[in-house]
Length: 370
Ligand code: NDP
Ligand code: GDR
Image (cartoon, rainbow, N blue to C red):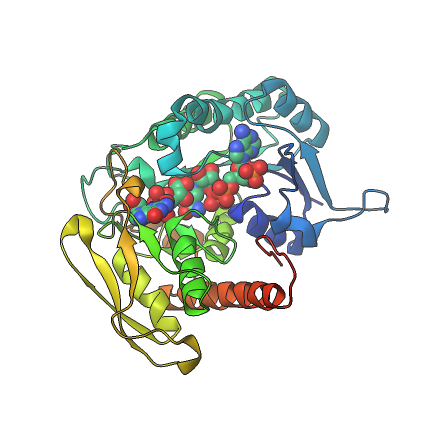
């Protein structure tokens, strides 16, 4: 039985990857942070009682800022594969916490690589590093490939640039099997609530159910190459099954603006939106609503701009070319953007219908998770 260790197992990708590896027969170990409230919602369904025999899913307390802790866990687990997904992953927040972001996202990667080296596991342990399309930043060339120059535009992007190169360096210097997956944005019903897609699908669901009035957003013109997290974790695994380590772009090859994503989300619930107004004062207004239950009158303003969501430096356009991954790894994504938006909307509608029902029945609910 192969053993995998996942940092960031409580996050979106960690949860999907853990599920995938368990179905492939792995013993899965994950590092979770100590928090003052539960932070394992996304993986609770995978939990196994440690008192049972032959458990194949185990969590360890740890943090990417703590080298001793990481080294001890890696020594204990002796993993065949490490997936380093843990990170302060919010680009806007990285402007507020640049040093912390550098420590966790940049040096955290070094700590993992160095632990593998010091523990003499370089022959045994393969490493996947969660690199990102944020490395490209200011547009140099589209579509972006493994050869496109990097120009990160946030403390997050710069920290991940260090992580990318230190991974390459340890591969070359110490012959470690270490790969960078340069993943473009990928989303799902498990996406963190403050990333733009999930913020939009949650707000759309709440607006049509009468639980929220307005969705406030920042830059509607930003364009992203959005795929489904389930497809992307498959590519992570494939990278570590090859004979040679390498770096790969994972993307859909299509780009969509934030504004178009909003229109798609509202479209899923039968609402057509029109955007007009000056750049900083653009407003999304209801043109029609085909589902009577939702009672959204024509002309209702449901989307507005809040400049607080603008970033000091923005990444305007991302569109990736995943030819190398498709050809070498035989990677075949299954989801279209339309299917992704439909799944996210269905999930958030279900979530907030339940919350509304409970509230109306007199129960005091906080955010309700399934
Ligand atoms: P999430 O934000 O959903 O998850 C991040 C995970 O990292 C969480 O488990 C979080 O724990 C953990 N974490 C945060 N800080 C630390 C720390 N100091 N020590 C240990 N763990 C920590 O991210 P995603 O699942 O979306 O992304 C996974 C990885 O892929 C990240 O590295 C991200 O930067 C990268 N990436 C993501 C893309 C995307 O579109 N999703 C695209 C390209 C790269 P907790 O739950 O306690 O907060
Ligand atoms: P991103 O994702 O920065 O690409 O990083 P995010 O969803 O946060 O932003 C995408 C684009 O939408 C614009 N935007 C807003 N973003 C947020 N979060 N909130 C808003 O209200 C809003 N309004 C407009 C942003 O300006 C941006 O242009 C994600 C993360 O998962 C990273 O960890 C990962 O590396 C990259 O994707 C690839």
